[in-house]
Image 1 (cartoon, rainbow, N blue to C red):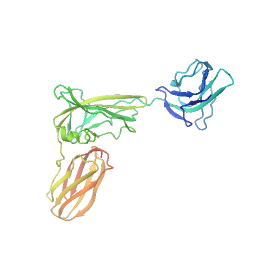
Image 2 (cartoon, rainbow, N blue to C red):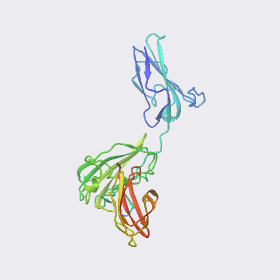
Image 3 (tube, rainbow, N blue to C red):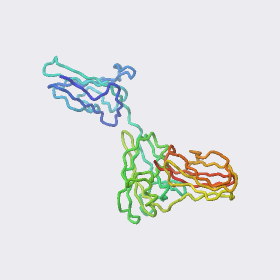
Image 4 (spheres, rainbow, N blue to C red):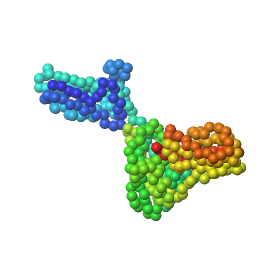
Length: 347
């Protein structure tokens, strides 16, 4: 007769907000089983003896051992349930046959963690023209506005412990009634360590109909409903929002003065791993190109300060390591400054 339990030699991390399940397999014909559970020293796995330390034993139970046990709901009345305890514990499963001297046991280690702070979503749609996020709108008459290039959403104001987010669905809807026209996208969970960096998650970075850039190509003057979930091991929180792509929001310069540069262009928009810059200098000039996030923090300087002679230039810039999102570019040539918005999507 043998017994095994699916608890690894090293302590298994579990949370007392969920069932703590021990599964067992055995051979032979056991007629009795017993579960012992006690608090251990995390440094050496030895049992701790103290007035408040959990020291549970079910005693011998005359029955075939179940194939799984929820350790938070152990049989008997002489224990303290793990749902109100945390720390390191040893779990011992013993079985025996009708012959009382035929007994085998298996011991494993678990570490029980308290439930993390509840995840609470704060979903916003970014307005690529104004730069001001729009709180999730549930009214089709007043959807959040987004550009076909810059359409993105913001989760950075969500609260609690968040270890993943998920785009449950993106649906095209009727702009008058909100009726669903078609479902464009359903996503899986994306692991994250908090939400501080989830400020501009690009819709164009999603693969829809086997390619990215769907909203740039198809979104103008259309309405959509996006549903998003954030969560952790103990729970989740969801919200949804209507948004409408009301303009292309192309990266026309917002600042431009003097005339020592001509034919300036930055493309494609959105871009993935490469961005191209084209320009003509009317005379010798010192140039710089920088990319800043929406808070003004410089995230990349693809062209460091360099002096160039008069002429026409086209430069390809590798930016695969830049996180996806909306950026403000600033191109300086002598006394000329050109700025605008550009979107980075996943490559």
